[in-house]
Image (tube, rainbow, N blue to C red; front, side, top):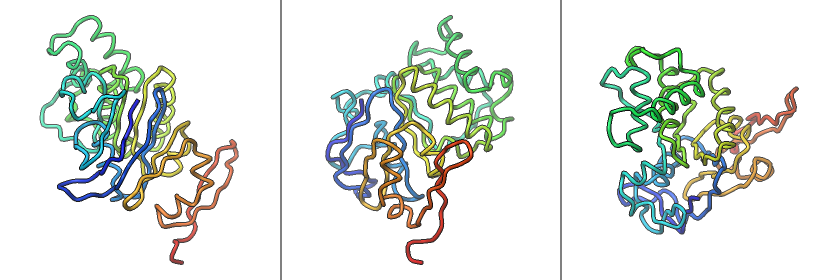
Length: 257
């Protein structure tokens, strides 16, 4: 689905990650994991075509994503950035409807648009926000509406940068459950996270970002068994099993201790 081929990832000719190569399979969840400042957002923005690689290529089904037009990319990838400014008081359903512009290229809704908007808002638990201005919403409510907009865009790939950061803890875990629902519908999700336990709760593959490099792990078990988390985050983790059988990683001591 998405492939990095010997890509140099960085900004303003400053290379953060060298010789990055991996393949993200279709209908999968890929988590970009790593500490703050490691380059997760830059890598994700490069994968969706917003930042060109300094060298190498990013391919989408064999095509160079950075040679596609914006309109073609909008039909393939829905994008939720980490931060977004809101200067216009869209009602919730109007804002979600912006995701449909990639399909009909106008702001005039079709019956298909109405169905897609309703379905996306139901999936993200924000139907109760219909009629509300986005300027009057909490950060968590806005985040759910943003997710609905991306789902309404109906693209094969959904890319999100720290999507749980503005959600309360209940909606964080509800969101992670919805990721699996979306994967089962055939979508490919690429998500950056810094919470290790949220990351390993997903049925996912992982791109672990460390200084200058990216390591690819096909399962959470292979990630946990490696020493890569310790070297990336600079801390030792203890592996525990919760009462419901989930694996939980507990940070214990810094590497230098």
